[in-house]
Length: 113
Image (tube, rainbow, N blue to C red; front, side, top):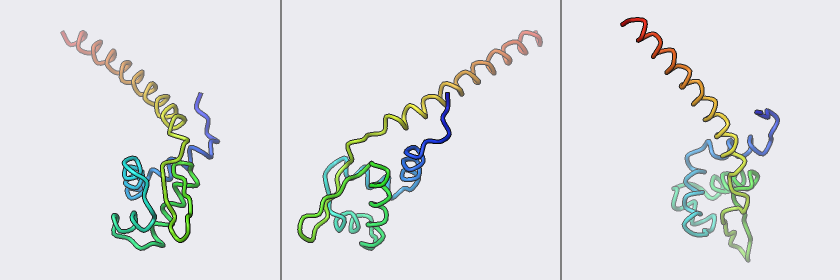
């Protein structure tokens, strides 16, 4: 059921664990942007933004292309299907546990009456 050795998931969730990187993904969802533009928008140095973009790139969530001196970033083509499926497995597990808890609570209420 749950696979523990999934490096791509580790990379994706690691990339998504940072608020700045999530913000970069939101920004790139609206339009492609240069690293300079992203650094300015997020009030950081170019070096700092390059590191964030590198993490997103290794996770396959962003691609970059250098034309002249400008490196343009865009959303990667991979999407988050595997990550959503992994989360869905746990949602189902928790739904089942809460359903079991609801049954226990209902039984206890019956016993009180």
